[in-house]
Length: 116
Image (cartoon, rainbow, N blue to C red; front, top):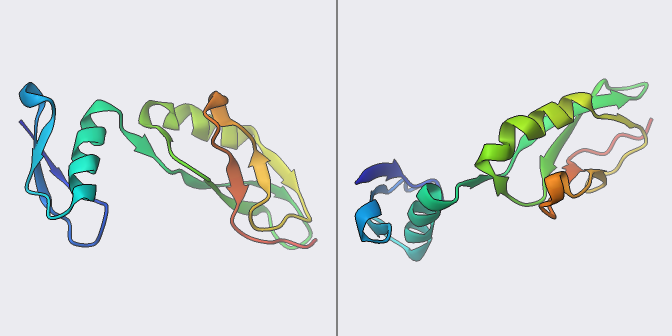
């Protein structure tokens, strides 16, 4: 049995996940909590938010995030990928900075517009 705190909403339900019984979840107050508890033990994923180097007159870093979730075990390698990336202004919110990260279909996108 594994104890988790659900992060799907601010309520923070205390979940118990029973690995011996097909990852059955108790303690959730909604279906999202059950899905979170099940997925967190079987196949955890995360959205990554970070920054990349930016060639611009007005800023040196550009905030970015994934436009979907990637497997948690890929997070460290994804951060190394971001460390090597550099973007040149102008860039707009939503522009793809790195596409198809590790062939997951998930992209890193800009979360800020920088004109110059």
